[in-house]
Image (cartoon, rainbow over all chains, first blue to last red; front, top):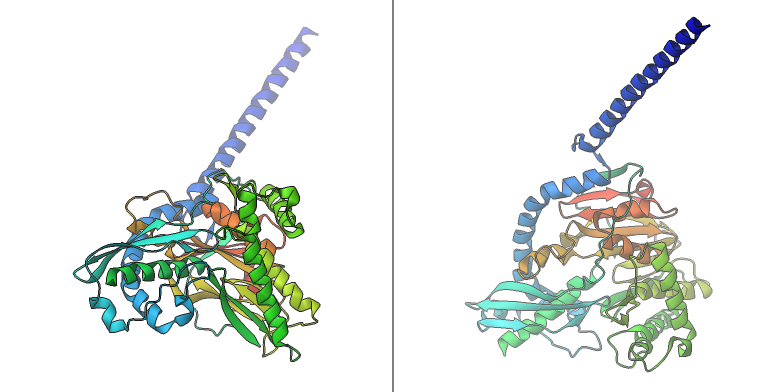
Length: 204
Length: 247
């Protein structure tokens, strides 16, 4: 009687140990999978939430550097060409006093007095854009945003775990014909308008 | 028949390719946008929304469309975990909702007149129906946030809406030494495709505000797809987005 009881106890201890070991093995495997999943190669074309953030952080320095050079070119070249070749974008909205910049492109580079000029506040419909331009030696040396529609910024945690894998690609310019162009253009037009008004006062 | 006018501080284009298209139909669309601007512009002293913000009018006294927009705003706030809120700094500004709503209504006016093939585009957001002049679905290019003269994707929209939140100048904030680190910089643009521009627009606005998580928010929603471009020039897109892609 007592012997069988002891055997029973032995049996249950054995069973418990078996469960513990199985649990440990499964947990280890689970942890390994999660580790591989999160820290896994960023060369894959698919990304999860964590990976896309990591990718962005890793490359942001380089991209910012690229941005600054390309933007500098556009800012010095664009206002002149926009003002002279694209009349529709040069029109001010109805509730803003018009600030026509009618000077030919050649006069743009040399006609400005040195100093710092503030552009008008331009209604980009979802917010206000206002720029300030620095002129040195008759040339634009810097353009700053004094106002910018960023008030929809919110910071909150969004649970993006257990999401299907999304795909990613490096963007490439397309040459195909299109009927319509979609995209955020408002702020850029407001930028040009505010810049034009700043440059108009730089001439006066 | 196609016309573009600058209204509400942005170019608005209406094109109808049905042979029965009339100038009156297109004029009526622009008149509608003018009414929307006069009613909802927070930059106009005497607009209805300004009168509400100045406490010269209560919401109960407001027009039916104004009350409709407030109801839609409340619903959108719930739909987007509070990311979309027209009330800030003590004022109501429903412009983030009104644009898509106005495009959708202007397009509906064309449908009511019996047209089948048209689109209405305002500041890069589009509601399209039917086909273009060559009998194909409307081909919509998604602008490159790094270069506004380029497109990076071409999608086909037969009946539906496409909206983009973001701007190509977003990366340029680095010129402003006063605000480094304050702006959300990792996502430059987020495009949402769906059955109508009203939903696509409000969801794009909310998702863009979420930063890099935005595309995941759209992935969770039935009937909407998104294409999100970050500051490294990498696009991340939802699992069904490729269905719309032509090139």
